[in-house]
Image (cartoon, rainbow, N blue to C red; front, side, top):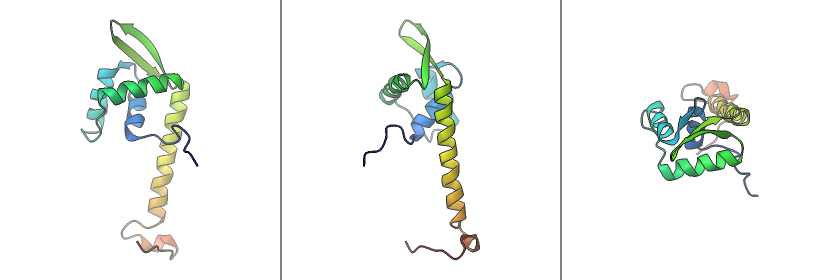
Length: 116
């Protein structure tokens, strides 16, 4: 069964949308993602501009202004909703991980263990 487009967001997608809660251009987004994640997540120009185009088509972001070749973007209500959905999905993952026994919390798993 094929996965629905954008059913889950990559880290790069998540951070791009997060950065676009404030109006900025692509170069600023790349710098902000790197700064926000202490360099753990990098977004190259090819990936960034491809995602900006896709997010625009999905109505998750909108172009706010163009100065020469420099375009600025801002997240839309639809994009905010998608970002919030992803945040909740990640919270559920964390809760499942914690429920299934983080080191030292085996008693919280109701005796259910899986051999890996």
